[in-house]
Image (cartoon, rainbow, N blue to C red; front, side, top):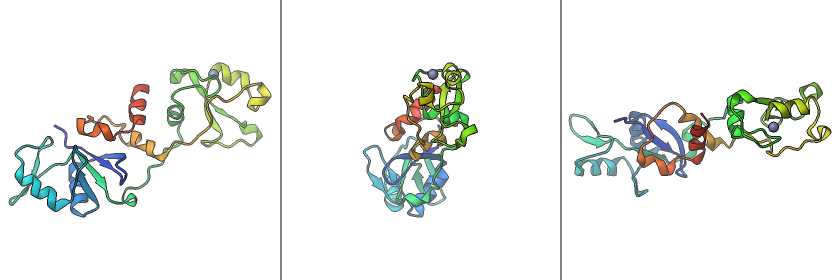
Length: 199
Ligand SMILES: [Zn+2]
């Protein structure tokens, strides 16, 4: 049984998977609260008290010579600023993910081997390499567009350039293979499941 803990932000949005040691220390430091399956929250003292009263805990117990404490499965931060914001890095893979492996011009879905990156405003004309000027394109659309602006090539963007919402980074921090616990599911954003399907 893995003792990973799902870390939520103050709005109960999944942001990270962390170790039970870190989760418990956040609770101990009063930076986070334990969240149970009914969305009830516990501070360290009340969780410790509850732990004495229960015989079983899905992730087991942590013991010291004098007490035991149930290892929580979900904890929620009390403040936003406790976890560094994780920016989605600007990589080919993340751009493909951002558009669901679709060509932004024809809207069709492709395996990554059949996708390219396209500068909407071509680099040769000063186009920048950032989330708002680089989109996915299939190879035929890419060839058709060449180094023109979409309207010059008689093309239209079906998917508008966008930057990932930072919340999507929950998907990033979960990308290493972790077993999703049943108690986590209601907190894990759909973006995560989508990204798993694309792999
Ligand atoms: Zn296309």
